[in-house]
Amino acid sequence: MSSTNAQQQCASPGCTKAISSRLACPKCISIGLPASYFCSQSCFTTNYKEHAKIHKLAKQVLAGGDNTQSASGTVCSESAPVETKLSLPDWANKFNFTGNLRPAMQSPRRAVTPGIIQPDYATHANGVSYFEQNDRASNTAIRIYKDWELEDLRHACEMGREVLDEGGKALRVGVTTDEIDRVVHEACMERDCYPSPLNYYSFPKSVCTSINEVICHGIPDYREVQDGDIVNIDVTTYTKGYHGDLNETFFVGDCDKDSKRLVKTAYNSLKVALDMCQPGTLYRDLGTAIQKHATQNGCSVVKTYCGHGIGELFHTAPNIPHYHKNKAKGIMKVGHVFTVEPMINLGTSGDKTWGDNWTAVTTDGKRSSQFEHTVVVTETGLELLTARKTDGSEGPCTIMPDWNEEWFQR
Image 1 (cartoon, one colour):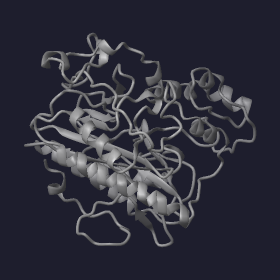
Image 2: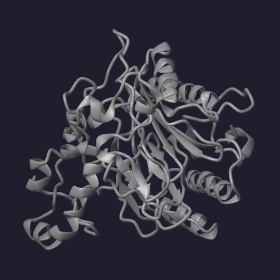
Image 3: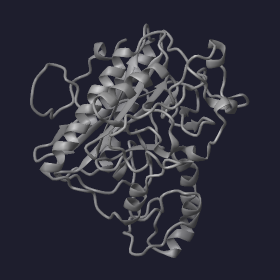
Image 4: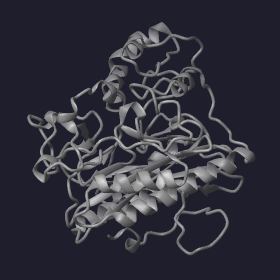
């Protein structure tokens, strides 16, 4: 699950100075966003107009808690008539959609098995993670995980891989994304995992399912998947105190050539970035490699959302933009754990958020694709913690496999 693209240290775009005070943006605090800190009052004043854009962008993640629509407006029973299930949510009746996809109603929230360890936001009324907010306010360095910590983090990532594989097996023409959510949720329960997206800033489901022009954060509903759709399944599992995050895009039925080019480009955009990961690599350089590959294949890179640090927290430092000339700070060191998850569009790079305050779509209605892995930096490169089990081999995976279309055909 992606993070909005926010800068570390001084929050002014382009500022490279470290934070030396607790000068925070009052607007961020007043609307319930994690505090954004600045190196000086003059820097804050000079750059406020540009910084203010993040208030709108961050609401794509945080405003879900303010979306208190009635159950009749977004949710209906699984036993409801088909016409009710496929009706538009209240917010969608006058919404200006960019593409052909339309939302349907959602099923009620699924229960978590008693005894499963939950993250701090799981029971918060608005899904707020105070641990993440405190980390954002006080963290000045990228965490280095020790070997004993990585054992449990590997387990979380392995569980995430198993759960995504279960969700992928269930995907086919005619299945609903609500059914994918059920499969993912139950797979999490069977493995004593909490599905990290559930109630994260009020996200209502256990998995993100993003179809066709949806870039990310699609909410599962009663719409049936159609022949020719592309569907991204984004899974994060929380167990033993750690999160493991990954996603893949699948072809459903007979997809057109542009869709196949797009999905392959998204896969290889992630691969060219992961091939660079080793001690000493600048985080900002990943975006240059990603954008170069995407552009060479006639695609564009979404700038609003980024990869992120992960582990005990769902989202933490570093932030990893996927585009050229970004301002990401930091150098990879052994023990850094993070996700890389470039979102690649067939058309322009712009995005728009649906009225559910979560679903991000392309502004031109053309398709988007994404792949994601969680990795840890090692002495010799990286370990792919969420790797596919393609050949039954044991031991750590240190390189992302070459593209294989058959893996993603449903």
